[in-house]
Image (cartoon, rainbow, N blue to C red; front, top):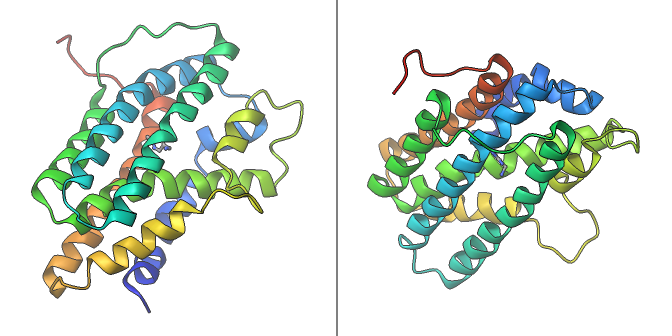
Length: 223
Ligand SMILES: Cc1ncc(CN)c(N)n1
């Protein structure tokens, strides 16, 4: 079994919990409470900006030209995600107001910066991976359940993340996991477990990101 295959097996319980999270269920039903959508979009704007900067850090850790090109291409996808935010704000009529990272956003993005800055190239790839991979799983499963029906106001959001079958666009998740397998080949077992933890912590934080919006989690005190 490759490093990534083992990782995906370890990730299954978390991925199932994400799929059955009430926020994801509400996306499938097209009935997400407006305050949840607004919180999510505001925090995700912070998250995506940090995601771009962490991708830049990852790029500085490799000399593999194909990886650099792919990392740049995946960063470009963030522009589409801002459009997906517009879909959500179009539903609620909200304008972004909260320019503060709430606790779970800060925890996740701090983890991303620290892993990419202090870790190996494999850590940098691993810390970014759950973001794209988990949303591709969500998109694919929601489409397979028919959640992208015309009446669902979040149809466009769902389809953005569902992997494009038979398209010319490469499946970047396949590349991400292959890049991770390549990146860990020079690492010892202890370092590999560190990379595995980097990935699994990010994936758990994906679950917390959904949960934070659902529960409207904020700082206890005014900063
Ligand atoms: C927190 C989070 N994780 C993942 C994605 C999908 N790129 C996102 N937009 N936001």
